[in-house]
Image (cartoon, rainbow, N blue to C red; front, side, top):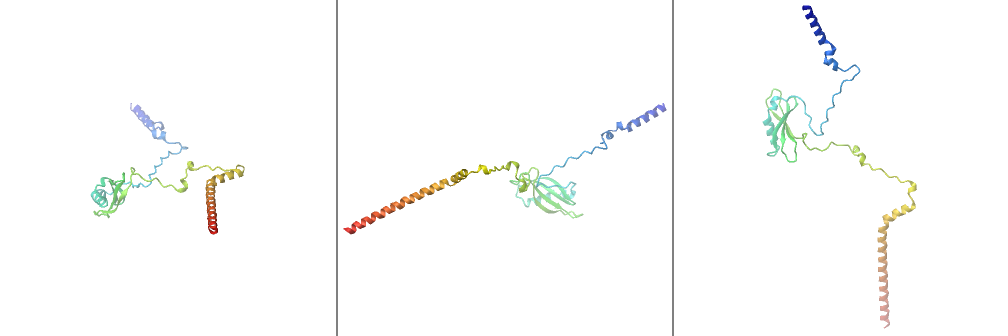
Length: 216
């Protein structure tokens, strides 16, 4: 019995240590296979802040009232909403975020950057302002002028060959361009000529009358 138990034990150990029973060995890539690539990180929207990862300073993270009082000093009453969180900016530097109720700034957040010296319990406010969030309406990312022309904006040029351009077509184009203006000028010249002729006839009549009066 002892020998059979020993054989069973050896068989169990051999089964547990065999490659067929190890899922990790079965899933391991072969020598000729490349490891799977990690998916590329999504590019953040232009204009959004990029926060550091890490736990913020506990003492500064608890200074919510100090941060709120500082933000209320630059905002109008009722424009500062609920506290949204505290972000780490580095060693003993924390940014507190508050909901913005400022008209026209939906999705934006008030922020107050607080800091302290090493082993100090005095909180100092170093920066205040507004920051956009994922829900903010922002201008699109700037595109250089050279890249703003899209394929659908380009109009193909119609090239005319020498055979298509004739003297008649050129004359017709000139007549179309200058015809109405020339007609108006011609009518104006005719009117001036008629006025001048009428004035000449009137002068002759006046001279005849003068001659008759002198003869009498």
